[in-house]
Image (cartoon, rainbow, N blue to C red; front, side):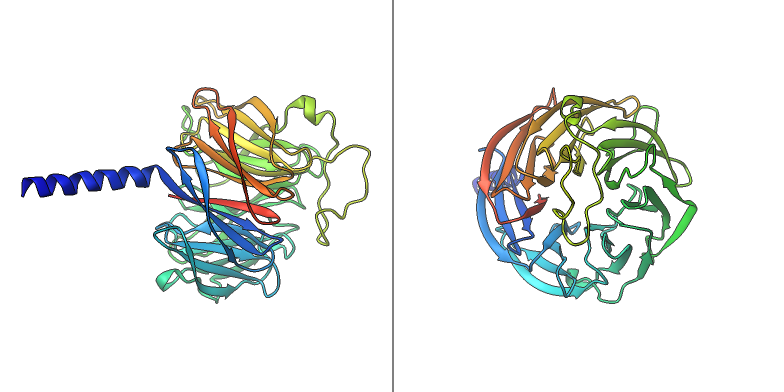
Length: 382
């Protein structure tokens, strides 16, 4: 009997260790209308393709449910909808349902309870909140649709799930709302927005909250400006409003000097701007490691990913290095251990797997793995 219990215990420990050393990775491919699935083997430091799933043309932003059982994919071609996929134990995806959305959504997220899908529309100048019902299906009738100013982009609640924020790329503003986590509805905070406008046309785009408060007790937010090429650091006030502090260049200055300020991309297509004297700055995505020590951002025109050290005292950023990455980098994700970063390029046929040096924060390219066309969003499930 003791031998049986010992054997069972050893099997459980082995299974747990295997689970900790593996994760599933999903990459949306807007041009091929698919999601590619991979296994990340952390012990072997490699990605293994699992399969490719047809999800619809312009499949782009994704988010995973809190229980890690569902993957939600926003499809930005008509009819606009979010597609729900069940994540199988082997990482395979099984289609569950499609739910209409009021517009093409450039960003999707969940509130911290995982009960509401939050989505924002760059072209429609609005955001929508939908309840997630039984079996992980998104309900078709929105809880609330809010019309915003020009070019709503990202959408997230704060770490405590009391407030909701939406940057307006076309108005240089960050909208501020109170969020009712029971009903899923929002009401404007006071003031209803703050300007992100040290200069005209900064283009606030994606943002990330620091996973822990700094040593002064402040909750930091880092907001990437698409056209100005900066990362604005903001802190949250007790009433849920934000205060902007310094703006840190999001590229090595030696690279940024060879470029000019960006411009908002037309709705007809990202590449439909007239020729410019110098390459235009065009920031994309931003994330922090789970321990909050390092921050990374991507710039599409020059195809760089940039690493920063985060001060534990006050959250200020210090440049580590900008390095070349996949062509026109779009989205990336960092695993729960903070040791691996996976990045996609919209004009690359590969995704890149990097290791993160735990002391310096520098990235080391481990391998490049084929993916679909127009690779966009990266989601890690573990």
